[in-house]
Image (cartoon, rainbow, N blue to C red; front, side, top):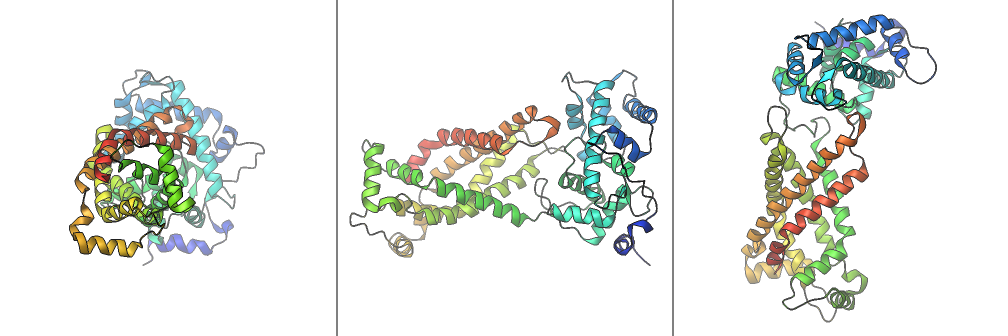
Length: 435
């Protein structure tokens, strides 16, 4: 007996013109407009007006003339979306243009116009054959291009949940109905994540990797990204890090000028990068472990809506920093010893010899000297850093249209402010640990 997946995947060998049910391709020239949407749906303007008015009335069960959070939540619940994956709060926020906590028909209509245009644009981008419907192979290609690996059964399940008439293809009407109340940006990654959360979880298939790291965008990519970013940033700031450590270990009044001269005298330009190789080697797993653990802890701490709040971010960030710091602390200690090693002759000890000397002369416990003040510093630092970063990023979204994500410059600014705030708060503990 053929499975649904077999039926879906066998369609890859069929010519497009053998597929029944596709609507006629839209041939209207010019930029995408609501006229294209009407053509794709086979609706008149009056029919579309009536449909949107009926949907508003469905939510407005009290006939108040506006929608508030409770009515939106009740309406979404009536559509049998699992409670933990409703978007009532986000939908209210994106519809409520004047931010009065209520959505009148004009605001609701504006959301519908913008959302249907957005959905039509991505529908057209996936429908590469431009025959007015999305074929399973076209959906497969779009997911693969987005870095999402999906097997045949999952592709079949995806299509089945969107394809209401079960003819093996997705029309624009079916695509619109599936995503019309999804308040976030309709990228292929977000659409897949929405389906994954609502439908996979609904049948008990809980993903091990939390939201933010899809199980089909492998965790290894997330870890590698964190490691590469950390290594690049540490290399760029290596001279400042060496100078900071030198100044921290001084017991008398120290100035930046003489310290810079001493570093140059000992090793020239390369002297400013002493210990950077080990720093890069240890910061890659440190950054990766910290951010991955942070995502896991956010998922564990968050409420049913996935919201952790500033307090939860602080706890998750602090614990993630402690886990990461403990895991790489021996490398951190060796790096600090290497950076502070006094070598009048210019001879820097080999890394292997320095590590061996610490082991033989001081014992294995020496590799964890200063761990306690380090943890006392890293927990509030990581907590303040990550919590402030996400809080600032969330604040920035208020000024970004269409629920988009902050751009690189905004994220860089958020990271700079949050990092400076965290480092300043715990700097005294860093001095104690280094000494």
